[in-house]
Amino acid sequence: MPWGFRGVTFLLRREGDDQFLDVAEAPKDAEATFSVHQPGNYSCSYRTHEAGAPSEPSATVTVEELEAPLPPTLSFLGESAGVLPRGAGANLLCVAPLSGVEFQLRQGEEELLVPRSSSSPDSISFHLNAVALGNGGLYTCRYRLRAKQTWSSNSAPAELLLSDETLPAPELSAHPATLRPAPGTLVQLRCRAPRAGLRFALVREDAKRRVLRVLSPAGTEATFELPHVSVVDSANYSCVYVDTAPPFKGSAPSAHLELRVDGSPPRPRLWPLSSGVVVPGRDAVLRCDSQVPSVMPTVIFELLRADEEEPSTKLWSSHASADLVLTYVGPQHAGNYSCRYRLWSPKPFVSELSDPVELQVAGS
Image 1: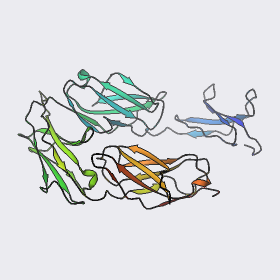
Image 2 (image 1 turned 90 degrees about the horizontal axis):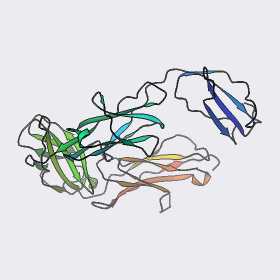
Image 3 (image 1 turned 30 degrees about the vertical axis):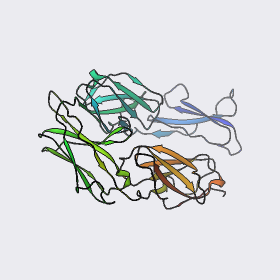
Image 4 (image 1 turned 180 degrees about the vertical axis):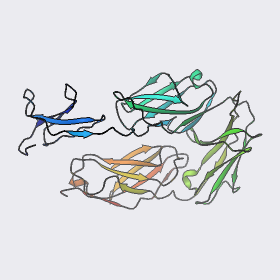
């Protein structure tokens, strides 16, 4: 492409297709980037104005059969598991790494044809009523490009446990037997039921009930471990169990166990997702990792520039890390940045700042 041309339109064509696949306006640059999702032989042309004839096509580029797309994620209220009363419904959210795809919800090898809705091209909500839920269990989702036959691999499973609360409540205890463990201690929360052959869930009681883990021990007791506890583990906990065989009954929740840990939360770690100097006009993305398991309710991650008190950007997240974005970066954004995270309930705290990371911007 001659460097003297500016403000042209680029056109992409695949061998065997009558029409151009994609058109890209390039008002400033002498090049354009196309995303390709199908194998084939591709060439591009350009034209200098809308009514003009396209140039001769470029040499062809061959795209081989694409690898299977990355798996999506499936969650229930942001978690990988949930406990529901019998007769309730549930919404499962499937998120793909691509937009404009076709989704499928599955239980085992069976596709579940349930109502669905979407407010974003890369995700869909599956709405399961009591009939569709049946006795609960493990669910997965997958997706495919609408013009392709190949499905992605399945998501990691999301599990829904149903409990009618007719079985006796289990007993929940902490080991070491203190409700104020020292920071860094390994704490075991043991949930004991009247008999074996059950599926246990540990529940954290914050603003909402969040299932942290699910276990199926051989005996009558499930041991849930909280390694290296810190103030972020301070919460009320309970546990439940469900029968994995007909008639699939479930227990009432155990009595709450209140765990309180003093001290400061772990210091986060910050690093850029791209190396080298950032080109002006691009976004800069820095990942802040709280370095704690994803057991917290929604936390706020903040990115702060050196010697500034107000965050440059912030993000609410229910995960252990967050990607903090500085949009349309210019030379004025160059400098050192740190991150921190904060929680408002059940016990408010703010972490220390991470070690600083230098953001370099071309032209600064």
